[in-house]
Structures are given as structure tokens and as C-alpha cells.
Amino acid sequence: MSARTVPDDERRARLAARHAIHPAHRAADPVEATRSVVVLHSTEPATVFLSVHARVDGVTREQVVAALETERSLVKQLAMRRTLFVFPRDLLPAAWGSASARTAGSERARLRKDLLAAGVATDPEEWLLAAEAEGLDALAAAPEGLTMTELRAAVPTIDIRADLGPSQLNPGRFLTELGARARVVRGANTSHWRVFRPRWRTTSSWLGEVPAPLSSADGYAELVRRWLARFGPGTETDLVWWLGATKGAVRAALAEVGAVEVSLESGAPAYLLPDDVEPVDPVEPWAALLPVLDPTVMGWKERAFHLGEHGPALFDRNGNAGTTAWWDGRVVGCWVQDDDATVAVRLLEDVPAAGREALRGEAARLTAWLAGERVGTVYPSPAMRCDPGDLTYPVLRA
Image (tube, rainbow, N blue to C red):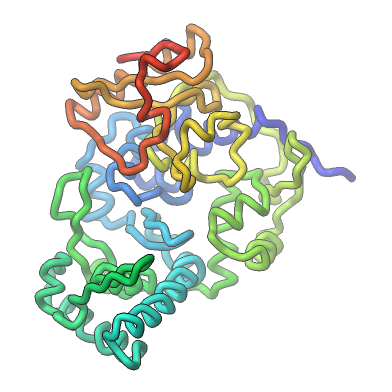
């Protein structure tokens, strides 16, 4: 029996509902919003808040902070592709044993090499073990945690800096490696929601009882299971990229979860969970404004079914997505803030009148939520940077 073909319009209907960005399928709270896309990108702190806002009606900044800092139901963790994400707490053991462990291994190898090259240590591994013990002791003695500045003062050993050409040796790399190994965690923020300056904590002091990491195979299987539930159907290429893993690890995980092969409209083979093979119902047309690096934009390597030909205009040269404007399952442009902080939608293709009205409505919703605060980014796309007078289609304002 031949594999079922999943057309692009069904893929768009799936993401609309499962990613909680369709108005009829919004999430109830920040944790549910995070689960809707498995994890949230946290490279830029504002992304977390804006991704939740796009998925939860009426959410406040305080509710997002509460999930991160009071309830600690959402936790920042370095994992796939050496990227900082916000994880639902129960998914951490899967990441610790797989994607985070892979990142930690490569980070430690680089640290050993650079410590030796900089002349800091003749035995880098011995140096790292001693520095780790000092750092963890200092954090254990500080119930509320320590900022980077405070930790450097408390542990002069790690206060090292060296310019090694393509590589920089600094205290942040020490903490990055410890964080990837789940020995420390980014705790309470000491700045506002658009800037993240955390107090570092030991993982046990922040989470209480720390569960054991899953095995690498079980961890990857759980990540793949959750990804397929939200992003499927997806290809092997998508998963290798999203996980930052090997083809072997992905194939083993697909076999473990019993993934079923289907065909995409392009003819490429892809996968769904065994209980998710049947077609899904279409959804009513919808509009959304998503932030820089939002998981719905970044969740696949092969994005043509929703991105079309707009990749060069909406991604930088390193593959980082800027803001995106969506109409009926397709990316149709981006959004920026005018000088008065009003959200303006820049279209890259023609959109029907109903779509323009819906996008104006989303612009008004986001403008009201931002309440005059401006959100900057280090990942502006070409479309975000261009002169609006050079655009073919009209700019939509709230």
C-alpha cells in the first residue's frame, strides 16, 4: 500500500491549530503555549514573551515571568544546535540526555582546546574540574544565586579572557558548558523582559529534586515524538536540523516512536506518529504576527510549504528568521514598529481584503500589548531593514 500524500494545505491547517496561533485554537497559558511548539526559542529574551502573546489571549508579562521564575514550570536550557530554549519542565530530562549532552560535549572539547592555546592550563580537564567545583560551591553558598559579575568576583579562577582569533575565551563559556550539562541554570532575571541578565543558580536549588537524564536514545525519541505531534509531517532533514543530531540518531528515534512514512506534496518522504496519520479538518482563514526566531517559522529546515519564495527577504545569512506576518497558513511579510512604536505590517505579496483587515487587527492587538515599548533585535531581516518606500505592496498599520 502506497504512503498517503499530505498536501501543503493540510500541513498549514495542522500548524495553525497545533501551534496555537489560530484564534480558535489559542493556548490557555504560557506552559500550554510552549507545549504547542515543543519549546520556545530564547536566544532573544523578548521572543519568549512575544511567542506566548501570539498564542495566549490576554496574557500578561507577569504571567510569563511567573511561569519562568515563580512556578518554574518553564525552564531555560541550552540544547539543540547550541541554542537557548525555554522547555516545559517535564521535557528537561529528555534534553539533558540527548541534545544538551551533545552540545555539552562539543563545548567542553572547545574549552579544553582554548584553555591550552591561551596558556591558562597545561591540563585543561583538571582546570575545568577545579573551576567547576569552585563555581558550584559559590553558587551553593548564595541562596538567591549570583549574577555573572558576582560570580566572577567570587570565583576569580573563571574570570579569564583571551582573544584567540575566531574564538574568545571568557567566563560566559564556562557557564554555558555547565548549563548544557544541567549543573547550573539561568534563574531570576535582574533586568526587564526585553533584556535577560539572570542570576545563576545550581540546578538543584532552582528545581528542587532533579530527575535523572534519560539515555541518549530515549531522550532523542521523546524529543522526536513531541516534534512530530506538533510539526509533523516532517522529513528526516527537518529533524536532523532541528535536533542538531546525526542521521543515525534521528532514524533510531523514528523507529522507536513507530513513525509512519507519508509523502509530501513535493513527493518527498516524511513522517507522522502512528496515531496521527488520518487527514485533519481545514481551518478558517487566520492571521498572525510572530516574533524573531519564533518556533513556527524555525521548526522545519524545509519551509517552502509556508514560506514560499520569501526566505531571502525574511531570514538573515545565518538562517535566523526575523519577524513574520501570516495569512491563512502562509508567510506573507514581516512586521516592524514605527517611530511611535505602532506595529506596521510590511507585505511581500498581495493579500485579499479579508486578510489585510485581519492583519491590521493583529497589528492593533500587538501594539496595545506592547504599550509603547519598543522591541529591538540583532536579527533584523532584509525586509525589516528596507525602506518602506521600496515595497511593492502597502504597509498595514494598526
